[in-house]
Image 1 (tube, rainbow, N blue to C red):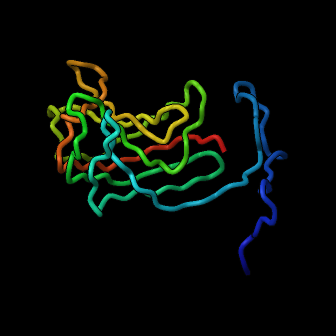
Image 2: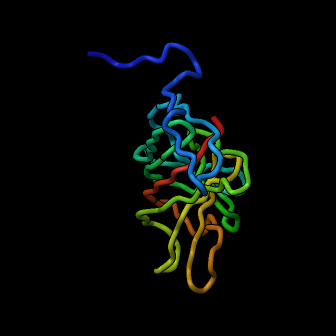
Length: 171
């Protein structure tokens, strides 16, 4: 009639007796589930010059971490570019955990809705979490230019996106 409490750090639920050893499944590095948490975080938009754009009070992110997998979603709404360099690329920062430090760890995420952006109709916007960082690049995809980094000039004072991304952290 209560919760299961793990009494020591590094302990958890051990699935080693249930781990399949199938051809093509890769090497198992752990069968221990020893971390779960959920919470909120504050997404930020950062210009290439390091200036953080001013976000509104409606900006909010949510996360769930199960083992090393982190799922983040939220909304980023700005009210000022705050001096972000117009010709430089922008990133989303403030993710709750650092992405793992291995080639191939650049996790991609979606932008489900966007408004107040200075982009061409038909352009798709995604996010890509960078290796060993807590920042993600904004990527624009269209038929004419392929995939390019989003520039601060393509965001506006009232830029607004709703996003979701899942990535793997080191611990």
